Image 1 (cartoon, one colour):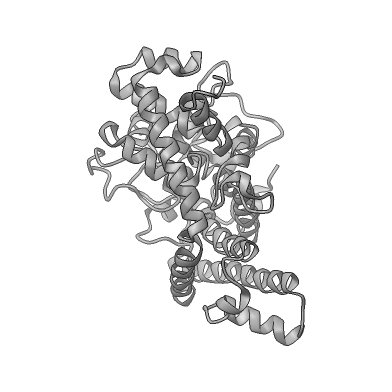
Image 2 (tube, rainbow, N blue to C red; image 1 turned 135 degrees about the vertical axis):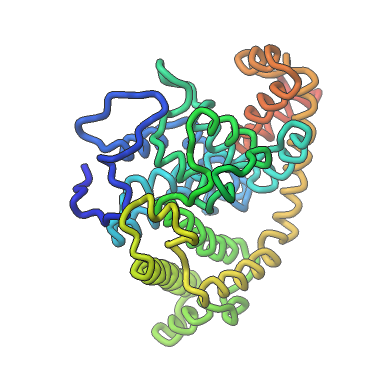
Length: 394
């Protein structure tokens, strides 16, 4: 179990957790946040991330990242950074592992399609769906639905990108349905920031996807190292590698440049966060939550570099014709499945059909959205064939 005497005063102390919605006897051998992490790792939703799109649909190649490998990379960065900063690394890891549990098949393209189809029923948001997964849709325990995670993990999952409300009195009607629904039972203080551990997990997400999208884009042949040599941050690392190892084979050249880029991003996050903490001098996790700005972050030059890098990746990778073709097909798959299941819920598997038939129209739509959001890429493609193709067995 974590030695809490090493934690900074502004770290979330596991001995002072606000607990769980449903009270449980805590473990003698694991902290509350270790148990959260372990429950997430053993959940069905986490396993299914193995076959959910990051950028490339799962069947396009074994080497490309999926939501599962992405989540593991984010967790590694968050855990290591939290340890360096003397934060609660178990909590940082739990938030990182859970942050993508609400993603649909086919990545953000699937989310956009499902949000449009749910426009008359409170919409769809992957962050809110992640909360729905861990508080309702995982149904394995005798005493509760979901995973019954601690308050700190849930607030980190919901607020890792910042507060959702301007004040405690702000109206909730603009928030996604799942967050409104859960917060009515368990106040996550949506007007405050999350703790530092969740802030670190959010930055780890940025570091992971910027690096692995370069790596996957190079592997796919969407661009080469020379074409990204003029970009900030990565260009310096390519030149450094070329000076140290002239004539290096291209795969090793890419890896050496990207690992240096990775280290530079992590170092910048640690240095800038340390600087902000020294300036703000918070004396408790609550002081971190109440602070007017995020206390974890990147320096201004690195933030500017990220903007340029993202613009390049958007143009050369996310909107590459090969990716766009697959995403177009993915949208059509979801657009065909959703209205059919909404109109005829008896076509759903029996346990899902029973829930849909017992609900009103909005409730049925939410059941269908939950069903589709929980699909892997391959299952969604197979379900499309089973429902639409007259020559496919049901």
